[in-house]
Image (cartoon, rainbow, N blue to C red; front, side, top):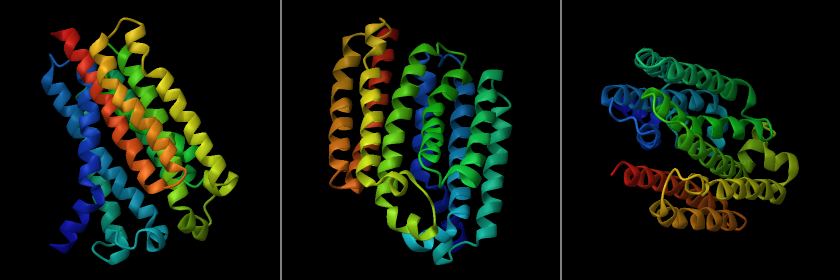
Length: 277
């Protein structure tokens, strides 16, 4: 039972389910929920692939986690590193089968994501900024994947992708600031180590600025109405506040950035729902 609990914990179920929610949002914003079965395939594949990605990330990070996250399943002995790798492969395999049932564009996005995930875990994770950018792409692409799965209208989803990717880059940089001690001990060259904590946080703030500037585009282009702006405003304020907070308290700042990104996604849902109704 301890191994089962360890395997489930490796998936980080809350994060995996959250990724599935993002895929659902992408499908809904694209206006294509007339094909609910395809949306269900995409959502399930996203949850499994995200869980697999989290598990394999813990596999490659097992040495770092002995310093930064000793309570994680592999460092504390709840599951072996080999067991974590096998569990990850199983999750990825089921996700691939489900993805093959979707339209070609969704399959292409999934293939690119798989290549990006492998590149991140094996090559780019410890490189300044590049690993952050890949994680941001993978997060934002869940919206694109959802929209492509139902062959919906991708224009508003692309804006959501840009907003989510920029917010995620900022959050990942802030997390690197939070983890700088363990990363330096492991010999990684993350952005805060390469350019300094304050400079890295300034880069994060710049990406948040891009996200804020992109956020009203669906309204300005006539895709969504005033209801979208009304719901979006608290999310934008949260992004700005989270960025400011990161300079003094990175742990709190990155949580605020994550919550604000989800709040912005809800604004897109509201914007689409008003159009549909």
